[in-house]
Length: 500
Image (cartoon, rainbow, N blue to C red; front, side, top):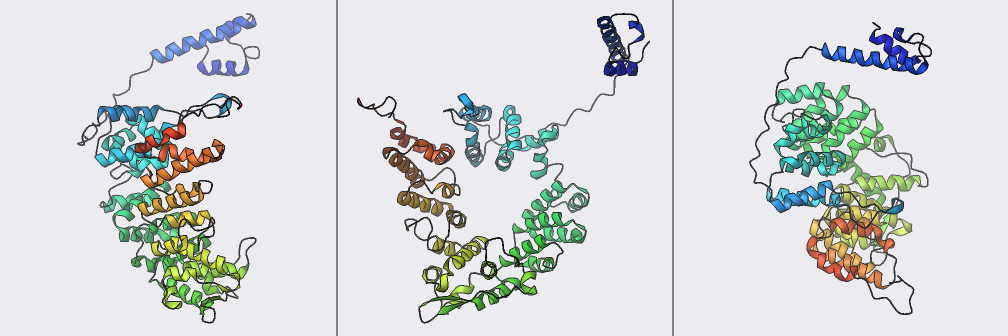
């Protein structure tokens, strides 16, 4: 009988070029049929001759979830959110139906706040949703509970749950020193990154010691990723290690180490940067303002401390160096240097020789890096201040970063005031940093601004980005305020059909 390998060869070459023995002298169609007959016969023989393997061990049972069951109405809503897809109209354009999956973060936040357990039958869909969206993973895994780990061990597509959830088989407990050390020395890069983050959140010093143990043997790109994990729990105890990293052979590692050290106001690097910046900025007694004398060179000491010598295209060298010095200097330097003034008083001072924009932009970056709410408030100014930029912020992007340093409610109130004064045309970036669901003042300001825009005859797609945010960020309790906005106006007798 023809062997299986010979049949495969005939199928690949074609029966015209290499037929099977049983098809000799037959037509082309009969030769192909003979090949298939032989393949069918071989398939039955191969299957019939297969010996049964040993029975696989049954998986262990999932750990019980002690949390209370989710109410039936909430379960139905979760099922709807997990199965929904954005409505699509003709021509590939989005239809009128909203994409309800955008509401999953809010729903999960509420369910986790009440402490409910996830319905087992919805866990696969929930894990699929979290696999596609990294921002969903922490709340989804918290809601899924121990059954998520059990399922992740059975499906490779859900391995992210093992890497990011304490207790997962790929991520040992931070208290298990031997297992942590073994995974750190033998694990894959992604596992090591997740492990270092978990240990850092549990014991910051232990994570740093773990990183130091293999630092000299790590690749430059890996050192950069590992170093970034020290942002969590950054403390004075990290300074000696970061000081040594300033001499690293990788420029990106040196820059990151310098950035972390500058976020420690008492570090030696912060002190060096403060002294350098203070020599460039001084009070102007004659005009009650600030004078600026930017650095004339970038010496090796500045470069070691993270100052990049070569500016990007379009930037002057001296302005580039000055901005980096001011950004890295502790903000406490300036009240001492400028007559004991408060941040708001300092920001209001005139700056000589057109250096104000450069100086204020550097202070904005310093306030964000050092998470200084008082300086952020001073640089933001009043939400109703003229123009898109405040007294210190040079752009809306800078303002959005400054808002991120403020408490959630204060952030929302400030943006609500900005929208009331300036409308929605410049508010999209600012809305993106506000807590969800929006507070009542912020939601009310957005709805009022949309009403004003409609009454003024603005086209709806002018604010499509804001309306997309409102779909998933507006508090459901504010739905009643949308009635006037969604009402269809009466058609005028002398107007064009559909003009309303």
